[in-house]
Image (cartoon, rainbow, N blue to C red; front, side):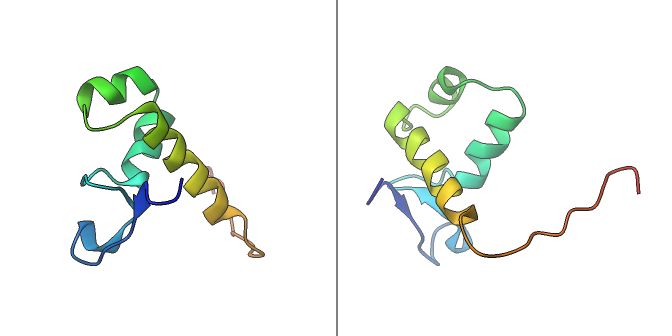
Length: 77
C-alpha cells in the first residue's frame, strides 16, 4: 500500500488519493458502497488497478483502526 495512497494539499484539498491520480479514497469507497464493482471502477477510471483499489480499502480500514468512538445517529431519529 505504501506509495499508492498519497495526501498532498495541492491535490484534491489534501484528501487521500491514488498516487498519480485525482481519484480519492473517499470516491472509491462511495462508488463501491453504491454497488459499483471493481471492474466498473477500472473501466470508468482506467488509471486504477486492482492493486490501487485494494490499497484504498486497506487505507480506509487502517484509518478507522483508532481508539475513537464514532457517534452514530439513526436515520429514523
